[in-house]
Image (cartoon, one colour):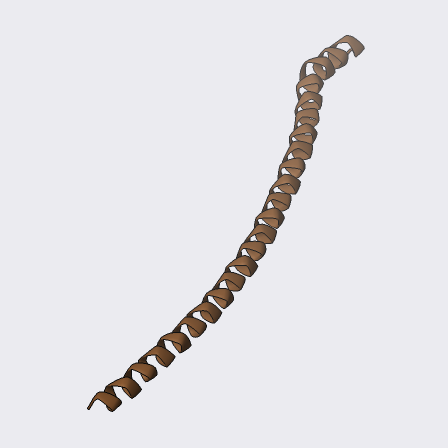
Length: 89
């Protein structure tokens, strides 16, 4: 084989191979960035979910305390009504 033939083969076959390898490395880097962004998004969602859960737990606790106080007040009123009804009879 002559040198020109070898050079033509390298130029014709080597360029697409080198270009393919370059594109594969660029796509790989791009995919790594996407994975990092996705992991960060999941982390933020998890943090927000924990914060929402904490807030809802606080609301439930406050609601339970309010209902307990209101129930005890209603119970006292009902007991007072029973006493008044007992006096009437």
